[in-house]
Amino acid sequence: MSSFRTAINFFSSSLTGYKGFKKLCKYILFSIFYTAFSNTFRQTMDVENLTMFMFIRLAMTYTPSLGVVSEEWDNNSILDEYLYILFRTLCHLQHKLWVKIFRLYKKPFNLHNLPYPAYRKIVLQMDICDMLQLSRTSSNTCLKTKKVNRKIYKLMISDPKLHDNNLITEDPLRQVYVIESKADLDFIYSSIKRVYGKNEGMFSSANFNYWIRTFCEHQKEQEKFRSIPYANSEELHHLLNFINQSVIVDELDLLIHHNSLFGDYKSILSHQMLDNCHDVEIFGPDFSLRNDEVNILLDRINLSGKLSIECMFSSSFNKEILFNIPQLEIWNALSFTLQDVMNMNCEVIILQHHILKSLDINRLIHYWLAGKMPNLRRIRVNANPDAKMLRGIVNYAWHPRRRPQVFRDGLEQLDCENGMDIVRSDGRIATLLDHNSFVDFLVWPHSSL
Image 1 (cartoon, rainbow, N blue to C red):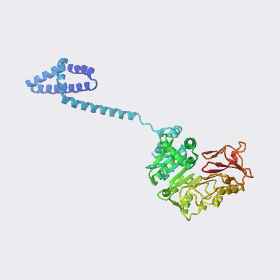
Image 2 (image 1 turned 30 degrees about the vertical axis):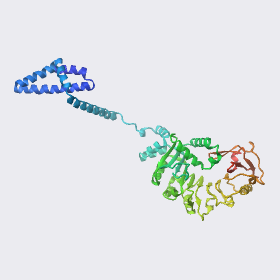
Image 3 (image 1 turned 180 degrees about the vertical axis):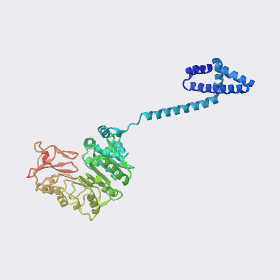
C-alpha cells in the first residue's frame, strides 16, 4: 500500500501536461513489472526473480531510487516518441468527446423554431442571395419565406451581349440584377447623373437600363446592388421559379440579345414572372427583326413599359404592330416616316438614326396642337434644332407661374428652364427642349401644372 501512496503523492505534483503524462505511463509500466515479478517469485522462489523483485520494490518504495530509475527511462528516446504519439491521440479523442457532449446538451440554432415575427424580421434583413438560398432548403421554408412578403423593386434579366461595342466587358455568365427599393434606383440615377450628366449627348446616347447595369457592375462591393449569375435558359428558369416563390417583384426588365430571345431563351417568355414585364430591350444591330418574332413577344408578355429595339427591321416588316406600345424606342428608325409617327398611340416615342427633318418636327407639333396624339407625353429625336421647328407656332419662354422647371419622366429629370413653351387651345402645355444633338418635345401632365 505504501508504494501506491507514494505513486499518488508523486503524480499529484508532477502530472501536468505531457511531462506528467509521460511519467504516469512509465510509472504504470513499473507497476506492471512489479506485479508480474512478484507473482512469478512467489510461485517459483527463483533467486534471479528475487533479485529483480527487490530492485523493482526498491524503486517503487523510495523516491531517490525512483528518481534514478526514472532518469534511465527518460533517456529512452524510442519510448518517448511512442508516448508522445499516444498523448496527442488521447488529447484529440478527448476534444472530440467534449464536442459530442456539448452537442448533446447544446443543439444548433434553428431558424424555423423562431416565432413568425422574429423570423420575418430576420428574413427582411437578410442578403437577397442568402434569402433565396434559404428558400431552397425545403418546400415548407419556401412557403414560410413567401409569407414574409419581401419586395424587390426591380429585377433586370441581362444577356452578356448587352452591347456589341466595347463599352461593356462581356461577363462569362449572364446576370440577374437585383435592385431592392425605389431609393436604391434613385441613388443609382443621381450617381450616374453626377458623373455623366455634364455630357448630355453621351448620357442620352444609351438607354437608362444600360447605365443601371454599368453602375451595378462597378459597385459589386456594395451588398445592396447584387447580381445573380446564370449560365443558360434552364438555370434562368429555375432561378425565376425560386424568386417568384420567395419574394414579390414590382418591376421586371428583360435586356436580351436578339439571338438569345428568339433562340435558346424563347421558352423564358412563357414564365409566369414575365406576364407583366415592364421593359424589354432587344439588342443586336446586325440582326433583322421580323413580324412573327414581335408577335411571339407581345402574345406571351403583357408589356407595361418600354420596348427598345436596337435591331434592324426586315424589308417586309409591318410597323403598325408597334404603334400601340406604351413606350417605344427605335435605335434604327430609318424606315419610319412622319406619317408613321403621327399614327402612333404611344406615350413615349424615342427615335435614333431617323429620316425626319426640322420641318417634319414642325408638322408634328402642329398635329399635336390640332388635338391629335392624345396619349403623347414625350417625343425625343436626335436632330440639330433650328428655327424651322417652331415656324408659325406661338411659343413662350419659361415662367414659373405657367409650369414647373423640372419635367419628370420616370426616373429621368429634365431641366426645362431654357425650353420654349407651346400652349394648346385646351390649356395643355408642351415644351420644346434643345439638347444640341437632340430635341425633346415634352407634354406636361395636368397634375404638374
